[in-house]
Image (cartoon, rainbow, N blue to C red; front, side):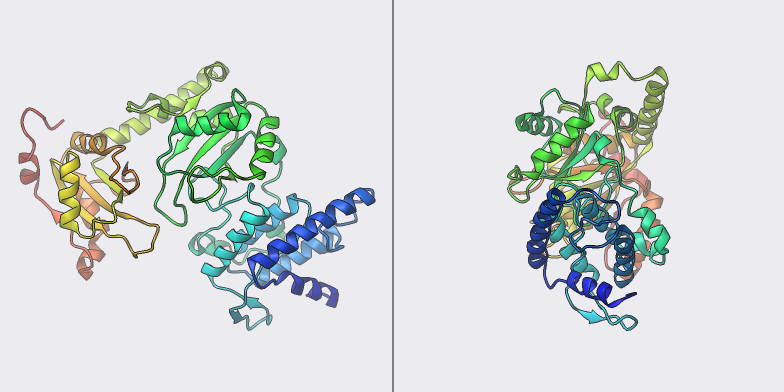
Length: 437
């Protein structure tokens, strides 16, 4: 720290628990409101409640980043969100070990994530949350994703901390913590019941993804005007919206903003043949899309369709907890779906008894048509007491040879042994009346 007063301030930031920080945030927020009423705005005066100038507050943030330099991106985002609320209470650091360079206490990745999320849920619950999808601005990032940025300079950090500005002009928001068995229609219905019927033009629901900390589904909503988005944020801050029965609905920021961006990215989903209602795009808003944008969206749709017609490998997620071995998994899937023509099957059991990650399997087929038949037969299936199956085309590993190569290290170690069949054996399983292609 540059001076003793700065050191005292930083010591105040090192709170022992999320509960203590939450209590402190509430006091500081009330104090800031009183200060705003009692004095005229002054660009040289900081309203965080610490009596800091903008310059010294920025320096304080940089010092804090250095203390937790293992996770700079997360701290940048956290401090930025707090700053937008009008006060800066800092980041809680539960003690674990001593940093040999500065003597400050730092913590493990697990504890910093848990504490950050507890703090965000209390202090900035509707502005940020844990998210794993690509269309959401992540607050908590894995160490691997931020390792290349750990040594960023103070100037770079200052820029990053302001990269999320302009939320008053945003129209797109992400609703997190929706039930795993939700849908496009149910997500739209939730927005309607909150008093925002006819104020939005896009609702797209995304199923649960079994990676990272994300364990519920989410939906992207675009409002017709920024005022609608602001009003929705205000309504969500009141809390009490908990359709999942596990966590209250929270909001996260979308990297895609506006009807056009969402249409270009996800418009193709409206053309998919499914038994359920697809994502909602307002018909009147569609009239504003230019012929060029329609052509771009069609190109994206054709690319997705091409992937589907040439892909042969599926990932079947959310297998019931009662399935604990490969033979049981294969027989269970064959009983409820169409796995005829598979030539590769590899089962991944649930990591731990209390883990939110469920078991899953990689399956490759001898023909793309057999892959699609399997996907359609399993889509939406839900075993009693378990999440609906999430059946998706494998993104980076496609084909028998790719599967064998990708999982070869696990095979050599003897940790997992896939079931591999020759083409003739797999193809012979398909009756002539069903056909291969």
